[in-house]
View 1 (cartoon, helix red, strand yellow):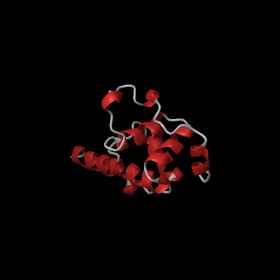
View 2 (cartoon, one colour; view 1 turned 90 degrees about the horizontal axis):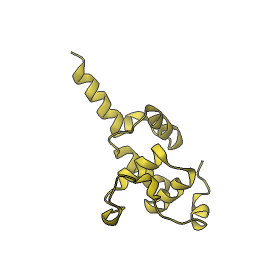
View 3 (cartoon, helix red, strand yellow; view 1 turned 60 degrees about the vertical axis):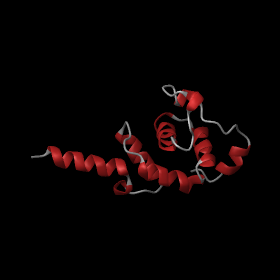
View 4 (tube, one colour; view 1 turned 90 degrees about the vertical axis):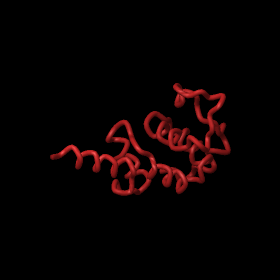
Length: 109
């Protein structure tokens, strides 16, 4: 899917679009400290070129894959399905899925 991302990054600006961080104070925003938020926003609202940006910032496809595993929540179930297919992950590897399973277990009496 993203086999040519490195060549495409060379041709585009490597910055996170402000439209993905509409609710953040961008003057004090730390791209490394907030990498889970950025990756989550790209998955939920990003354009194809935004993926190239996060690959460039966070260690390529493998680096982004590791960040995805740590994200606590995705807005839509389709996002979980997408990352599992696109990044060759099992849903059990995702922190958001494990947390959901724990919540459901506590609610079922």
